[in-house]
Image (cartoon, rainbow, N blue to C red; front, side, top):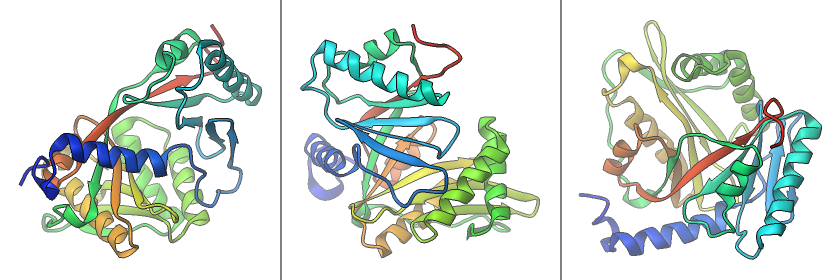
Length: 278
């Protein structure tokens, strides 16, 4: 069964329906309970947050009503705000948005784009979630600071990110939202080999999947699929209708086979104080 036939809807019609649900519920909303030291606020049509990780975040819903000068002022206001904090920040853009050349204006303001990802949505009542881990592996939910460090080891090995920073982020997020943040570990005898996270945010039909990573020597053995299945099971129990993933090109084919549909693309544009304002 392919993503084109799931639900009996034509791909374009299903994509439009899922994208409308995502835009209506997941764009520019406030978060779950804040970890200590984290902040968030609305600035007109924007949501911005900082103190969660080493860089801040800006999200927007609909900027199509802004003309060029108004959009320029909005961008410069965010640059001044994060510059005053001495923080880099990410402006998350979406391929289906209509605005006055937002990517081009971000580039002109000194932002640099990172890798484009596919925005994928799956309907929980239609996803293929059967899975089996290879013998000798254990999948469990992380609870402690030590568990968070084990999870961070996987990300640090694969993505070359700061181990202690990621471990601290995971632990603070779990402390603030112990039931709504699910951090999963897959462990072999020698240690952790895969990790994944789910945000089960109340007040939305969407649960979101993050941080799904497997160390290279264990790829192709169903670990990523098992982590998606476990998170889908948890989300289904909590009454969610959809799963959302920002997927890399490595993850996208797996998610498509499970029944997810790519509904758009998303690209982070990053500004940092070191580069300054152009």
